[in-house]
Image (cartoon, rainbow, N blue to C red; front, side):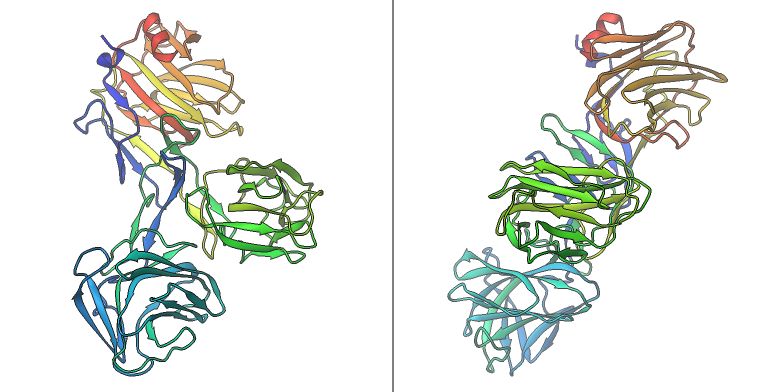
Length: 547
């Protein structure tokens, strides 16, 4: 018989949906955990790539005769599309300066994309009026021409004359997006009755066009959106549920390194390189005359810990230096694989942070960077928070389950978790099995002492505890608490590490909470597995379970 045959609840957080982490046992929904996080977030997915929320911000993205305004043009649906459907549109000018347009009320680094095919005209013209940004796409030759304020522009050939055309720009002022027909690659004028075919427009934050998301009357988001649990694969192997505190990335352009950074000595950045997302949204940073590439504009808070982190990999040079508040640089070795580097500094005078080349570098040396992040009042880096024109906050993760007294032993039990703490940072991180109060509970705690575990037991007014020192709280540990009147034990990684022969079993245990039972001692870290048994397992079974 397997130990799992004795379990009343098994949580292996691979199956999730918005607001829910499913239990494997029972499979009736009775053991499913409730999850909340009032913001988007990122995770490392099963391919080892950063995954984040993405969305199409346009309305009626392929219904060009609704939200879109037509000027000097006709739009006719039911045309043969790039995807074999009849969902394309014939876009025809009736006079010069024809256009389809949609008003936009936000500012950000964005990418507009649309599928297009030549008709009697060969030129698609995309334009944003706010900060004027313009790109012409030759639908016959596949060439692109741009004006100022364009970060990048691309054409991807789809087949049968269709291209996906995209333009990335800094939408620094609210304004109007326009899709137009042109007669050449430097004009916004077209003759009457010129035609092209269009389909599936998308506007998204960031430096690249991603797979199309259809919209109707509202923007649509996918990925790690609000209240979606993060099944995280950081470090490889089996996934875990990632729970983190609220954090803010103060850097306002975390991937483009434009706004909020001052570049030195003619240093340059070039977009279009493959990033830890697997997309071409990393940048090549090249040194000018000064080895300090760029400096932030006063992000740091004085007299508290600040964390600067960045993903980087080698170019023709294999070192990068980071500094906060002119407190002394930290130099890191780079490889040809993406790695994340961070420094934690309590600055006393200056508020800036620097990204620099090593002393041995010369003008023209380069490396690749992605995902800069600056967190104040923090002693360790949290998961990446992307920003596009403004600082962004990720709200804390919260997970719990109430009303499951029938799954928790009421006179004895075994409580098992495979977990790790997010950091040794002097705070308690607790998981409680309780009655909805702190009067009756059993906890599994990472304490405020580095690499120390504790189980706290309270039966009415009487409190007991067991503590043990482990090798490393920030790596995964298999922890089990055997609980029975006058027979409590803590097992970690195949070894019994603490006992109590005086503790008594609490009454009316009915809840699982990732805190101390009253909202304090919030657990932040990773949980690979949680198993509850309604009986106290034997020593042999506990060794097998935790080894």
